[in-house]
Length: 121
Image (cartoon, helix red, strand yellow):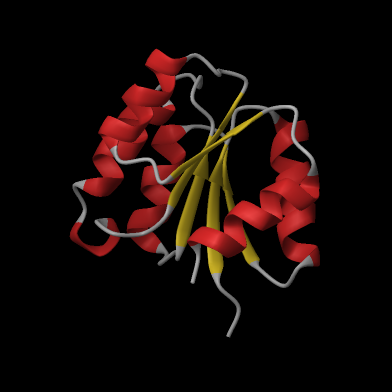
């Protein structure tokens, strides 16, 4: 059975690139346009991993990670931050919230798949 990956990004272009990259490698992909929608989807549909942007309206990536980590079903799932932010203080905030890995946009599809395969065992 294919692993299910939830993606949250306010950019339709990034969501499509991520969806296409993951689906082409056999993953089932759930999509959300922001953190609030991602939380709703995760409440209704089980996922094996979360990939989230940092800067989104409504609920940003850091707050999304905190809320997901507080859910019993998702306390230990891999969470990858996929963002344009690359400062050390942002990375530390992501790590403190519970991010497993950090990928800076723009990214190469093979780099995304490499991280996914590494953290989703």
